[in-house]
Image (cartoon, rainbow, N blue to C red):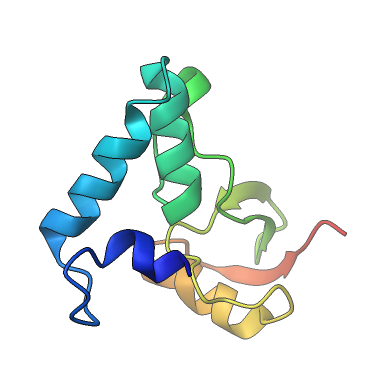
Length: 108
């Protein structure tokens, strides 16, 4: 079971030190720090990173603004947002400061 790899003391909770221990063990087998950073960012949907470390797992959408301009925007906090939950995506975009959204378009 996946949780058993994390919960070393078998108390049913994953504590910070257990989390760190798991990723310390995992990182020992990855000889490229950039790849490790990318893996962590993508696994946990952590926005940011530069170059080859840039997050690629967070959903990006085409935002069409009221004035007709368009931009591709990353939804920074997209964990738990279903692929068809457009209202929740719009709410997340507004929360991160995207304004005057007329609609969003999703890649299929």
